Length: 80
Image (cartoon, rainbow, N blue to C red; front, side):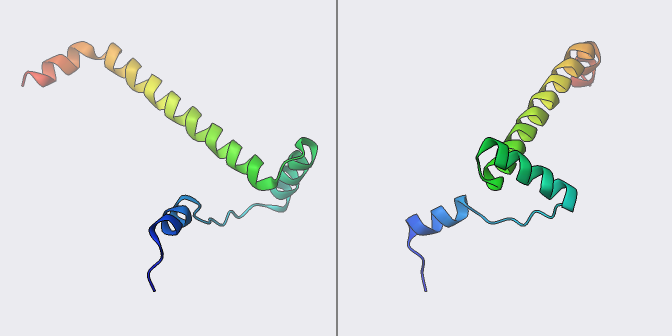
């Protein structure tokens, strides 16, 4: 059976994932969600987005520093 394209795209965009947490992590997530009156899923997704964004920004900063600090070496290697 063929799935209509719009439905297939929606399914791909909302792929399910199983996240295994310790009891302590689950309770911390549950308590945060309760305090913020949000779902555990919303809290987890926001935390993941913040983590990914932070890692991307830090990686870009490190690469920029390496390029700046090693500019002469990179220039010489490029001329080989």
